Image (tube, rainbow over all chains, first blue to last red; front, side, top):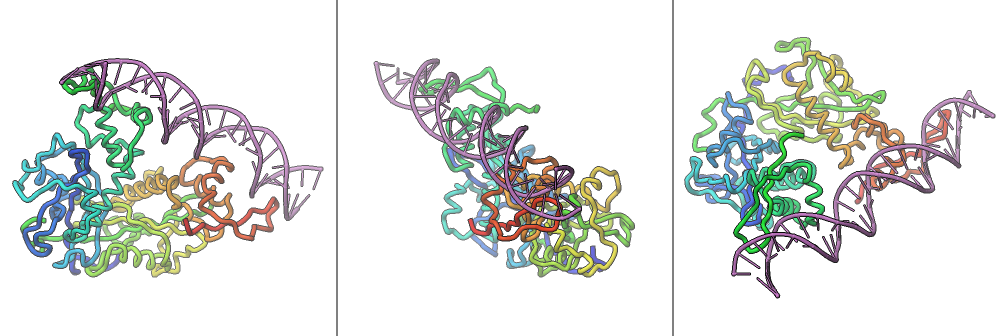
Length: 220
Length: 220
DNA sequence: ACAATAGTGTCTGTGAGACAGTATCGA
DNA sequence: TCGATACTGTCTCACAGACACTATTGT
């Protein structure tokens, strides 16, 4: 630390921006809102909250997730901190981005404070389009998308995008969506074999062979 | 973003803490300083700087590295942001940790502003000891140590810890130190084969077969 | 019977791991 | 010649990739 007293210097504001990912209709989606004020009025933005002076970053993220989705106890992790000087044209705001994953079955984002003005948008479509997003939120989403893809293969992060009980074809589709390529059933099953455990249930009512339900093995 | 004007709320200070890693005497070392003021007076701490109101996070990290080591143009990356409320007992300071890697040949940390009170400490020794460090700096160092180990195998990050020209035994020792285990020569060479290119030089003057010098292949 | 999807058996190629062997320096 | 370290050849084994095959539902 330096010798000067930081309290006499001008300080930045610190916010938490949230990337709430889910999978809907076999597509990766992200929760976004439409800004109703300047700057970037009318543009799409990530939901976010300012970090309270007596609030940890994780707590701020949890609070933001709760406000937007009504949910707590969902998976989240800190992504990266964005600190360009002019990322917000009004004033200096440093943004700590957090990524949250939620199975679509749990997600009812009108359950939060916001009852309208929020959407689940297709991430690939959004990133491929040249639509202007608020602030540096395009860059933040790209960062989250990469992290997601990077962690699929060497963590169990994908399990956070399926319901508590899931079929292997469902889980495989999640892997395929995150990786952006198709996988072979056999190989996929071998890979996840030691992360799952059977239940006694299976799907029914569809015009094909039923599929066994599994759950994530918690120990090990 | 929320509706309130953040400028009327109390803001945290934002600092960048630096983990300057190097390898000296076949050990992973980190640059640390002894605090001369309260709090944690006399305790070891990571060097750090406050982020200027018109300075990006990366720029603050570069400035800090320059002040401590006299170096610019060395490898660094953002590690993680630590925002516990009481991590600094004086006031709320959010710390964005950055990790820098520098080959020992380039490192002369008395070249910076600080001419004394800085040391290269053995990271494993430090983490195994129960020595009290300033702030949450033990946790930050653990975080950096893990990141380093995690990235060795699927990036070329280890190359930042050897000189521009290096022998394969040297590079292998870096890998071994970061991974904490010995490697087989043959397999190691196969792994790095497509990341290196030969030079026309080799070591001399040692009582054994000389070793060819390589450099990192930049294209590809 | 048939369409549709779930699930299995097995061959192959790639790459990590292990180890034995050869090469080249100074003393 | 010898000790020490640099470098190479090659066997094995685990695992990802590829693909053919069988199984079970509703219509």
